[in-house]
Length: 411
Image 1 (tube, rainbow, N blue to C red):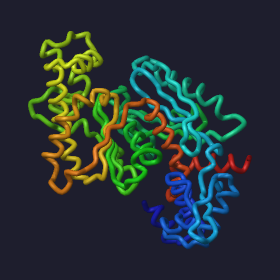
Image 2 (image 1 turned 90 degrees about the vertical axis):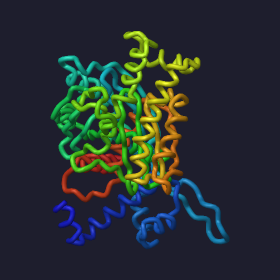
Image 3 (image 1 turned 30 degrees about the vertical axis):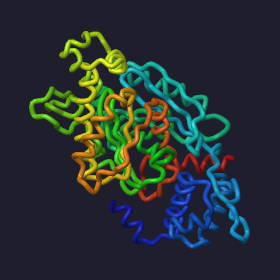
Image 4 (image 1 turned 60 degrees about the vertical axis):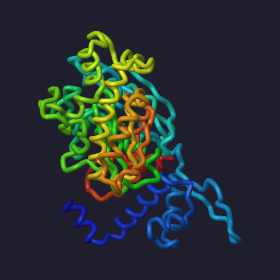
């Protein structure tokens, strides 16, 4: 913070130019194709300044004129868009049993996707992870578009400054994952909570493009939360914002892996639903969530009651979120949404009942589960670094921007 304030107080013309340039690149990336006059209006810059800065971005091969806007009597306006083929990023979602990877262009368009097994409990799991990532990036960092870096989404909390990960789900504690992998890959590696990466993807390319304040709630193996406030991800003071699954819902509830009882995750996750079904005599100990969902699909009353109870509990927790954060949009995602038809009625009833009256009309949308979308969100960590204003002296984003600049110069 001190470095930021010092640089801002200095009034450096170069810093101001970099800030404006990054803001324009971000706006073109999120809202393009877009006209220069619209850029000036959105960013409160003079048309002359926008003309100069966009001319530089065009010269650098990052932005190009892609179309003309309809004229109202004068000369047609020119629309600007990103040069997608100028660079690439790799995003990887890390789960306990597999890796899901997506390669994207600078404008966020997916180019290829892959999934491979990964056993986080293996003694050499980190070596295997590094080797897998090295194999994935080997074909990308040669001639052609510059590979800007690797984005990783992990279940857990991440200190963004150091890349240190705390992930009880993966069994990783105080693990400097970013630094370890950067040393092996010789590439920038940006790490964040996997739900945050999903929210970042929604903000850049999805339903969050048109709103400044929204939340992404994920359900399935666990319960997660991504918070976007004023168009930016909110991570909290130590990177732990969004541990929604550990909101305590019942004092005498089931024991959670975090050590507390009655966490939201112990009541609405897939594991919680399976325990309820086994206790009710509906499933055997070896049955999975697909079996429970199939029974509900077939109209089994006990299965539908289990889902309805979980939907009501989730609805109560989301109503609290609405009351505290006043989001414009609530997105529900994750593998658990495959059973949304059995959760929806009870969820919606409780949200509308428990939310503060003026906020009850909040939009709730369900985003179909797609592992590749989470990986695309991890890639968005890297792409977003190219758009971020360079306020800090050294941070992982700097290395990404340096690679982008080097790639442009080589081209």
